[in-house]
Length: 254
Image (cartoon, one colour):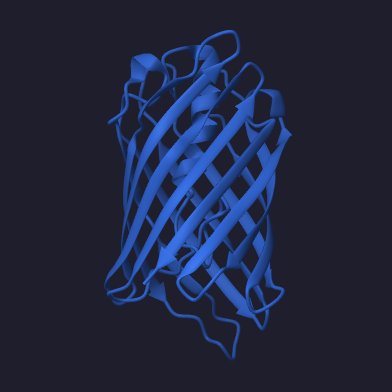
């Protein structure tokens, strides 16, 4: 996925982490996403940072900006413009424009609040190769993610998940699957806590599958301002895929 075979898994983990940043009530600060679009004619604006550390390298986004807009009922437009960084051991840290993410979320099944029918939606994403691949800051190729997400709420509890298929072109790369599931509880009026588990198949020739988890929180400072944080690590092939990762954001909704 990047300019050195030994770092492809690193960039893959960081790209997937960034690609999962969408929708605050669900989605961020987690990798697992949800089918819930932003309300019609409303905005979500994030300033965020995210990073993944593996053996011999740390890479991610610092800072990044995410914009989500409810362009139609049940339809959300999505943009992420990141400043990427890569910090291999024994070498200087490189900063530059990262790959730009564009997407459209569409919820086509509404939840039955009195029954068992969940919300269901799709959220296709395109990772445009706007970063400098030769510096290890991007993929050098347009990637496409085609997921389906499901969500159901029961009182203070919400659970959501799903997954999809990544088209991942480039020398040494291979297409792969990502799936995740999360449980979240509204602990107080201002605080929600959640935990997720996720799995990704190998994204490079000879690469490793990865499984990991995150624990996270969403804290409402006011009706319009929110803090989102999560942290976790891999459970499978962690030295090569995810020894430690985090996400932190300030969100403005209006």
